[in-house]
Image 1 (spheres, rainbow, N blue to C red):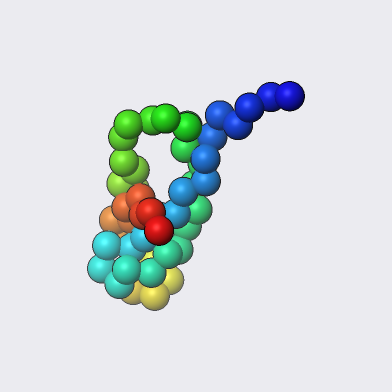
Image 2: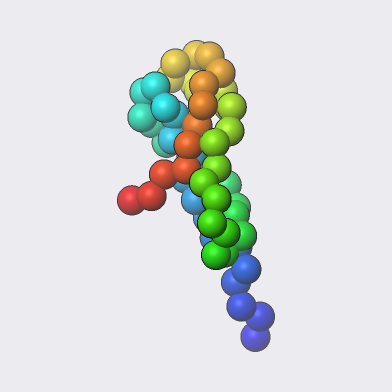
Length: 53
């Protein structure tokens, strides 16, 4: 059987702290994602950072 090579992570808005997006990332990657995405709560484009539970 094949092993999983990607994990599902959550992206959280930097302003309102709501989880808006989910993203696949390579397993074992040592970088954190910071993406500029649209936040439906803030109603503008904001930085969305990788979030862990």
